[in-house]
Image 1 (spheres, helix red, strand yellow):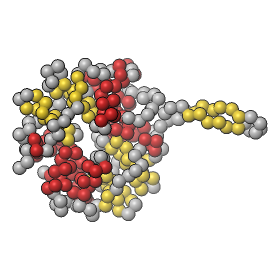
Image 2 (cartoon, one colour):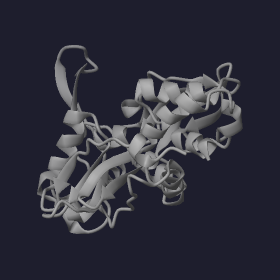
Image 3 (cartoon, helix red, strand yellow):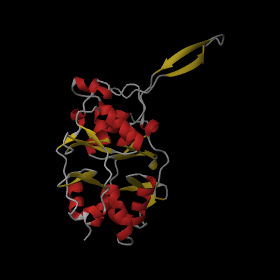
Image 4 (cartoon, helix red, strand yellow):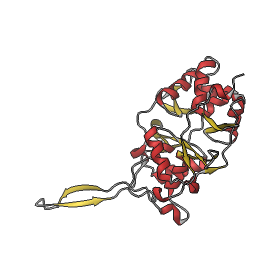
Length: 280
């Protein structure tokens, strides 16, 4: 049986617990990562900050500290505390059980010297493509009850729907055909002027008066919608395909879920969580 040390990533991005949220966000953006480990002065993991944590911040409800700019908010305010950890010598099944049971996307790996690495669902996708070809079809592991939104739903509605259903991504549909997908990353890193309301940057339109003789400026502030932030370069898969192909596509395209289609119609979604259940 494989051990975690054979699969884990020894390169871990960390921030100190006295840093601000803005530093963690910039680190994620500049390195194309979705999480950082928060450590104390001794280098011991004391928390995690993920795209999901940033999404909750952008929702803007709650205490007054949430209305501050993110470069003024302490990491301690939004991080998930007491992170679940595992040992490099544990079997990968231990990591899978911890990921699924605790609904997390990664686990810091620690040894006697401190932080030794991190294991994510993406790391386990590579195991899937190497070891489990031909075992499952996509339709065997996919979720058929798909939570969706349409292009005109507001970002607030999208966030509420994701939180209510405890999902990390949501498919955007048009006439039951998938046209995009939204993840916590799209919401966390969306370019918005006012994170508290989700209002986009001001747009200026020039329109002609009814008499046609002159023009005037009209400033319109509009709510950002699902269609504004969704990934519209959508990678899809058929339910008849090998689930190992789905894992490979997720790794190659750096995505965490695929709409499953029958022709053009949406029939399900398969995620990294669905796939790692297949490893068990």
